[in-house]
Amino acid sequence: MNFFSPLSFFVAALLLATAIPSPAEVQVDDCVVSGPIPNEEIPLESTPLNQWPEEVRYSSGSIRGAFKVTGTILQNSAYFSPGSDISLTSRVVGQIFNIPSGDGDQVLEKIFITAQANNAPMRFQARLVDLGDSPDLEQYAAGTNLLEGNPEFEIVTSSEKDYAQIIRFTFTDKDRVRLKGGHWYAFEIVSDPEFKGSLNWLRSLGVSKEMPDAPVFRVPFAEETSAEDPRTVIENRQAFIGIKTSPAAR
Image (cartoon, rainbow, N blue to C red):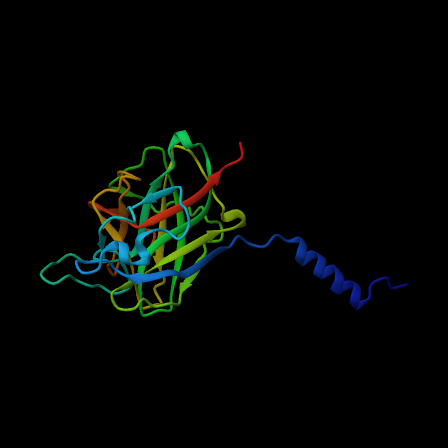
């Protein structure tokens, strides 16, 4: 007697599929807030970019600081500043941050960045690297991506001229990474070589009071470089980033 019907096979296949855990996912909202970039005529208080849209626990590059665009550009062709021989473009930009040992372990919930997106849509990869408890503040290696799915994301909303937007990353499932107290981490954005747009991750001048000594790193653009090359510090700069966490279970 045949105990297996086509319906039985279908039900078994459905149960097997639903039993397999879904991969971790990073949800990206690319224009949570949009507004003009502050300058001499536009005070910071008059733009919605003057604070994070949700309360964050750690912030690097105080949202109240001065905005600086140059040197944050992710794109796949070289750009040179007028009168300078220094390339301002990068294949990778990373901002480091610290979980103070007194705060204990934390679970990563959300990350916010302030950026200017040109020629969208554009595709990127998000990376999170554990730098340990005493990292080199001049350079670090690419390291293992703690975001297990090596998530790719798209930014589809272009910024208006002289405007910027706050982009929100929401971490779910296995990508709610446990951040160890006392460790330093780098949140990186890597450009997709197939896309020709550019993303300016806006930076503040000087060092923020919230996260001292938390510099921006990059992989400067050159034909022979790759996303795995060592990251090099950009002196005296921090990116606008807000990290929302919750205390980890003991």
